[in-house]
Image 1 (cartoon, rainbow, N blue to C red):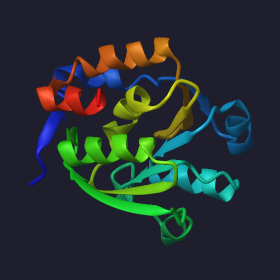
Image 2: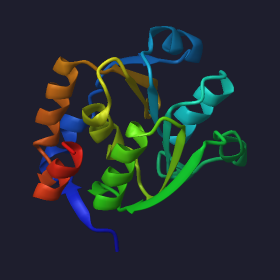
Image 3: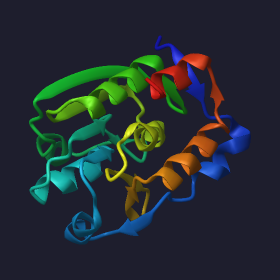
Length: 178
């Protein structure tokens, strides 16, 4: 059982449905507008970036898309990263291991494939806070496309406020601020 440091309460779910950035259906157009490094959250997003020849600095995947297992083509198309890391995190939560692994991966010089046993849906939020200014976080918006979040201090602050709606432990904030 993974140690949960943040949980999305039912009362706040609607707040998390709005995309944090512009939605793209064209990978090349997204890449033209993206900063560096790129952090991808989601198997399908990671697959599209990899197919476009742009291996993300960090790829967070869980083998699922919209609660269903991803196709074998997607699994085979994931990047061959310098480092593979595994972390467990239950649906609707962020585990200590996931946040710790994500922050460490963002800080590494080499590429990382972070494989989540459970669900990675909320990982885009701590990714925005942990990413350096100028980076981009890309995640999937079900049925619509890929959301590009270009990280600046204003966006970091907006996401911190959103994270404040989660039920969190002090350890969550310590991990993000380390």
